[in-house]
Length: 98
Image 1 (cartoon, rainbow, N blue to C red):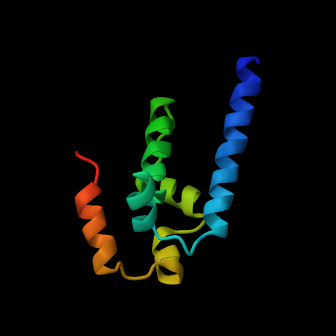
Image 2 (tube, rainbow, N blue to C red):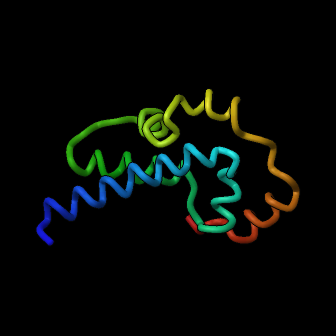
């Protein structure tokens, strides 16, 4: 496989991941963090870092809007629910070390 085709496939897989996240807005970020160790916000940070590494300046809010498909505050109002005590305890136990 040549590099161009590989990049096209990776980009398509990224778009599919974002579409999947859009379809599963019921899955909370804390659930993603507890199960997989990353969430939509992490993906936004990675997106921003990769853009900046390539000389494209975007801020965190712009990156989150790309990942969430809308401004983050709007997404939170529509989709985010309060974390349960169990979710918070699991997060604290397993949160990534900085």
